[in-house]
Length: 338
Image 1 (spheres, rainbow, N blue to C red):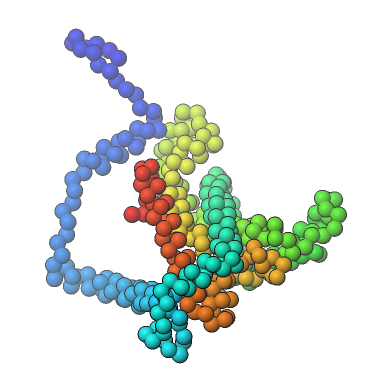
Image 2: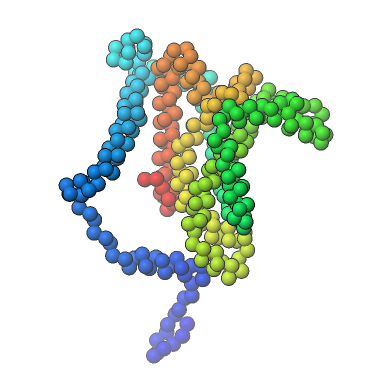
């Protein structure tokens, strides 16, 4: 604050690491808007190859994603395959009442929701943490080696993964051998016979298989952060932890929010293969998901109407969850899908 020509002038000094952002915003605002390209026949002819392939992609989506939705009509019918959709008896919401009066289906919803939330939280947090830790590796070769190795489990079939888990967690597996030799337990544990171990095993399998793959997009977001922000933070005396806290995490926050919104809709997609392959009669009470329920009741027993009703419920809940999460993000001023 100082006086010049009888007037008081106040000057504010921005922190060093914020100056580059302010300058970039000023440059962005100073740019004039480019005129929009008018759609003319000449422009259409010039872009005919692009429009051709775009039309093919749209047609593919309509044929294979939207036309099959006509099969949802089975959920409101006493569907008989020999009569078809057009001639089966219309029963309204009777199949939905049957579905929600079945305690097995209520338990299946609980299992699916629980495993979905656990997988979402654990895989989301581990992917972000792994990406940040991988970014802190100074050796370029070491970073590439770790990154490549972490991707590999994603390309393994769930059959192979569950086979590895069975060998590791069996009575003579490496986990029981280590626990017995360290005198943590007196005798081997049959992990696949106890319901309390099933959900943690599923979560561990998802983390091991998908963490490296899920971290790719966070690594890309980290590399897009302006390096001058890290340099400014270093000049201000920030250590590694403070750089992560005040530069890296805020820099990838929009990416985190978008991916979180997209993954919230997949909460009920808790999985099918791993639960089906690891499940058995002893843990059936906690291993069945909506997809397994649809397979056993809708397809195996030929009650396609019940299976379709369960599928509609799953889709409706996913859409509602996405809309709720999107509205919460919108009210808090965060990144959103729409």
